[in-house]
Length: 175
Image (cartoon, rainbow, N blue to C red; front, side, top):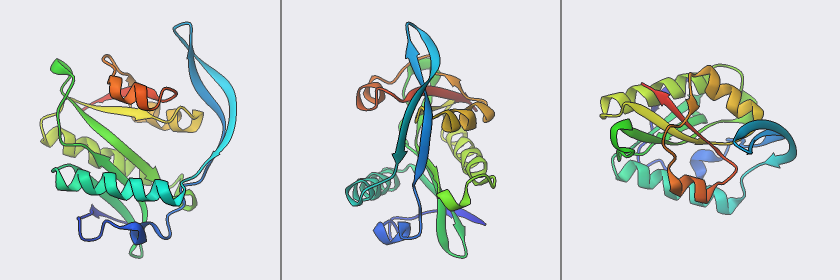
């Protein structure tokens, strides 16, 4: 596996041609009456062509504004990526937003996500953050990954994320 930054010249839909977003979800974390509980919420998470177009646009914006887009490549094919936005927020928390982290379905469970996450933490630290902020999918498997990476519920919620994805979990990870 080769890990490296992705530049604006290669950020296009073709980069994701062999990337499989698919995730079968059966249970998710939901906050009820101030407590987190596991609920049955079965669905299949996959990206449409419109969602891939939005992803490419967002990642390109991250690159152009000085953020990090970092990929994992197997034989030259993208199999995982992470992105961190360049603007600090959250006052004393000094958060940088981990805006995405995904590993292709065919490559999960091989430590790629961990390597990408550690690269994001290092980049955030080098760019003045004290913590990564993560608005993360509430699927039990996704949350288990973040917990293993040392993430906890965020002290300060980013309202924009809460409004855009009300079922996501708002997390932070100290650097």
